[in-house]
Length: 408
Image (tube, rainbow, N blue to C red; front, side, top):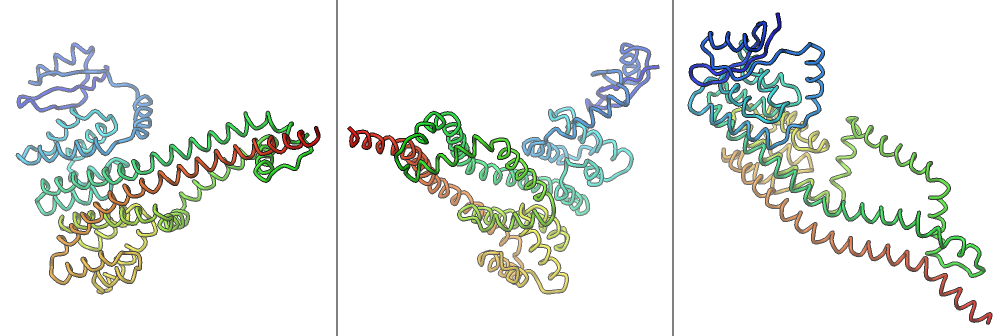
């Protein structure tokens, strides 16, 4: 007999789901009505292969920060009046538009039905709920202040989204202009310059340096295009493969911090994440060693993450927080000073909040200042490219014109 996956509402109006055997869809609806449910839908369950394919494809669907923030805010609203967790999750499943997150919520509700805790159920949804998310929920369950923890989680997710968008907006314009310049240069070298090359090579006039450079570039493009494309592709693939290794991530992230202008933004962003995440985890009651272990995975830079783990190891030896921070030689004096003050006065959470707010403002200010610096640099770069091409093409013409006049 066919199996139908159904959705229905109970006498309280809460959504319930499950499977039911019936000869037809109408029979399935009739059975649900007889059980006291209000039928919503009943669809024949697909084959195992179809289900596994759907699950596999869902893994590639991206869960945006907006989706997770909306879920967390709604979940907090459900927890506040004391609605049962499973009933709340099933209600949220119905309201969630992202299919991957919807599937994760459904699976979590089923795990809790089997006796798992909320944090364990969320932790089993690989690639959906981060380690920091699960750890904070676990701390909320343990301390009995799940609603407050969900509020902090929402703020943390919003902060992470805001910092990413800030950096993206800062880099969008420069990347667009640089990409346009590169495409324009390649187009000119491949389509325009070849029309002048035979004339320049056949002329008896000594070619100026810009023209000689342009001819060399043209020869490389004409003779070694395939080889150059393969070499560039190999370098890109090699770079990404190296970046995926622990040593590669560490080396590249260390170099990022030394890039002029960009490195300052990355450092300030990492400091803001470090302080904000640390403050939220400490406030949630998670032990400091465990907190630093989680923070090391969320700062967004492997070089700084290693320093955070070294600090954690030093704290285990009883050295406190401020001294290992100073020994790490990566944290700015302001961070060290405020954390040391918070450690001495018992107001560490307040100091961390102050650090986070300060660097959040600093990131915004530095990004705006970077945009002000980048625009004239790009303008000069564009002008330089146009000047080079103009000199490379027109200077031989002037020399040839002079030679022709002298010969006449």
